[in-house]
Image 1: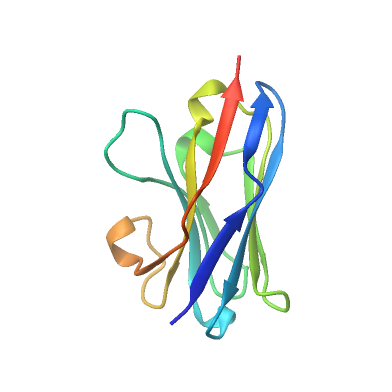
Image 2: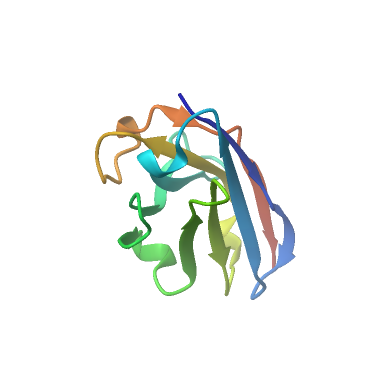
Length: 124
């Protein structure tokens, strides 16, 4: 199995940028489809943000982040990234990385491995 650790969260003003990282260990990173989800304040479920396939050649984004966020991975470094720009207050959330050995899917139920999350807070 794979262990995941997120980093890079913080407090940023609206319009700013952040880059999140997700470091993987314990198993062959390139075997996994990777994704970012987020849990916003007051919400009771994590929502899909972005997904990337095993070799990084295919990506998919949720509509609210399309054109502002970029997901990428470096299999040699066992690390996935989320470059976030033009941030707004609605992006405030705990961001989680997740790994799946099964499907290229935006369904959180397809992901069995999760990090502990990193807090992203956007101020007005």
